Length: 252
Image (tube, rainbow, N blue to C red; front, side, top):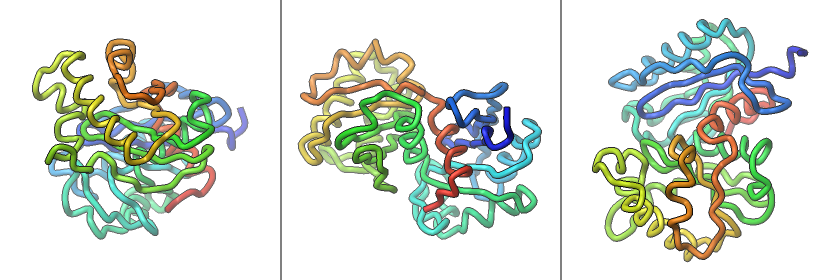
């Protein structure tokens, strides 16, 4: 396998930081994914050290793509969802590059990275039309895709629905926290999707995150009048999209 066929991606979440070498021709992992618990407090410097640890463990030398649960503009974090507030205003490229001893890095929003990976390697539904890609995890991430082109840094998980942020009651973490069964949780997701559908009129929803691995237990329960397609890459998409961003020098 040629060197430029490989990339490295790291996906930072509220509970875990995970990374892997990616075959950029197929979107598959090369070797095992490495996962480390997100440090608490999840400050930029603490998280960057975990990223460096993962890169060393995988014996990777080269550009690194990194996703953050934040709005990223000109490589500066503007928000901090499910990570420490000290991220706001941080130059994320400088923080990670320093921890990685000067390696080239590309940093982008986690849901945006996952959406780009799904366009490249996932379900055909992500490639055409006005698609809303959603990741259900600690929060709800979102990516807007128009015929496969990304409109970056949307934050639908923070939209107020019935007086509460969508991710407060319909994230995967909310399901775990409240011990909801799939039927109960699907009703909440359905409420969110109905609202998104009314406002944005998408041609399809593509749903990812770890809970998409059990999509057959909740997607059929949804009543929204828009196709809902499980993400083909499931919970791998963030890592794959990050590796693609590093290869393509995509950094908002």
